[in-house]
Image (cartoon, rainbow, N blue to C red; front, side, top):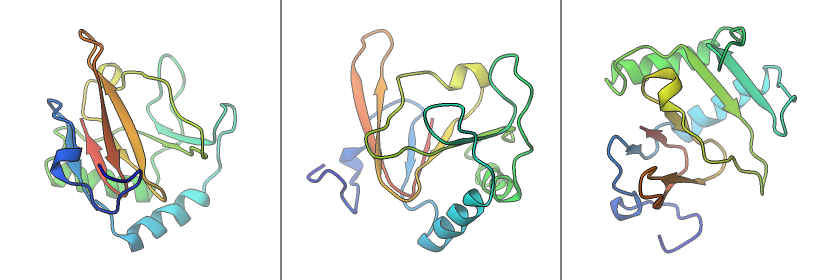
Length: 149
């Protein structure tokens, strides 16, 4: 990767991680703008150090969040129709990260026993992956893409 936020990502920029698929330009700019407008019409949970919108099944023993909105169900159905997941999604979390904010290393797949999809909107971002046994880290850049693992 030659720039901090390149316009194009080459296959060499994507780390070789079993089960990780990178889909560049998964949504168009028009779709991205529609998603942002739809997200901003919904209420934000501010109980954490960032704004978030949890939908559907929740972590741990908490009660489920509100139902996944229509725009989220359309994305989930698209992923299912494209065979990017074997099971329909029943959980979605929208996070807003401001400049300088990040998220600690964690594991998503195991609690839900299915495909995890991350879609970055508005700005590019880098996700770090760490191999548990060797503790080696790899980065994955994406912007308006779906990262599936």
